[in-house]
Length: 108
Length: 113
Image (tube, each protein chain N blue to C red):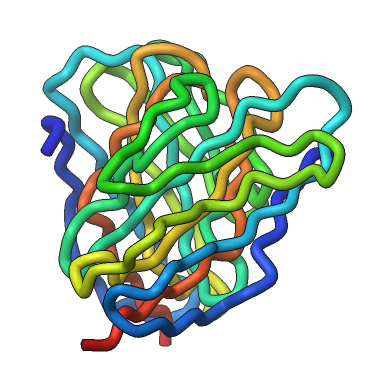
């Protein structure tokens, strides 16, 4: 069955350091993957999606079919990047499966 | 924020009582979803709707029912609340299917004592 795994519940980096939030998936076919983010006291919102191949707030994510991964990366973390990050995968046309989430803390 | 509101925002109730949570949208989106958010589990889909009176089960639907009598409202009912249903509940909407961007409401924190 399709599922998403985020192996790190917590991730802490210093400001200016590179950050990588891991996401692995299991899916038979060509997946479309998403990263959603929830900042403190804000709503969960889309950060980026695989199909658009764009960079949002300096974040990028590359789909690696060989490793079945969709890791989220940013070369220089900022304090305002501190948030909860969820990787997500459509289970079927109507159902989105989310990972357990990774809480990123960027320390000054 | 997309025009999505949830009510109530906080609720404390006792085991065995019925509870109804409301999601209201002003975006005229076809799809509406109810998720629960729990530590270690992320977001899990409870039920979704793909149109008025059209609903289906998600991953964790046991103990929950939904109704959608109007495009703008999607109700989630716990017929007899249990402590395991203590959670934060999020409503989301999208214009298309799951592969479209989902827009989330502010969440409802439910505590079942």
